[in-house]
Length: 226
Image (cartoon, rainbow, N blue to C red; front, side):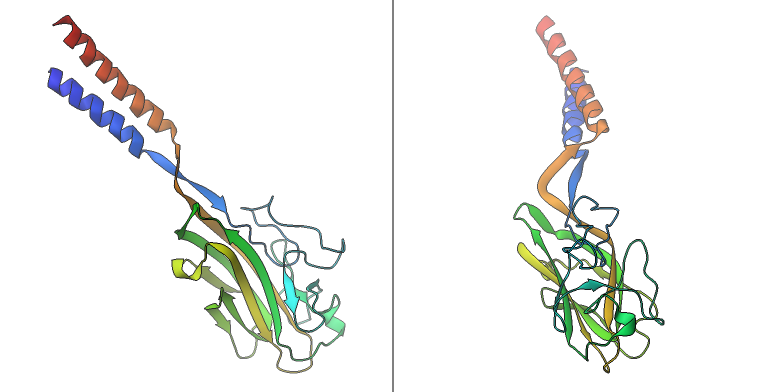
């Protein structure tokens, strides 16, 4: 009987160490149009750099060099609360900025204490016209042909080798087919990563540990009486 008590106590105490939840943190990636995501609302800048039309989270190389939030062109998928079109001009419906290329980029940092094998980014994007979505130069998806601006296309990034410890760059390179309005829109739904060897005890952990310690305590008292 004493052996059983000791064994049960040890097993429960060991199990309490296994019942834990790995801590998850957010990468801080923001949708276009100084919008927030539900997972990183404290990490995204919701006001443009000029207080109105410039997206403070995304950078544009090419054209005017400013990622402006713009009204959608008549055929573009509509703006929403989770993503808005950004373009070289704040009023892209009335203007043209050439054929590009227009490179839209956003950066985020992964620390040495975060596990690359758990990194996950999901979202959707559209562009006028075609575009290539990359992370650190690794191609994630391509939009080509006509109608790339009519609806959002989903993407998932979860390959560990696509991510880097340190600075990471998410890029959408857009090439316009003619001297007509051009832009890009992206919504982010998930942007998580787990901490390495960091776990937060669940409520069940404390219960298991308590049972294990009680069992060991009972065994100790019985041994003391012998």
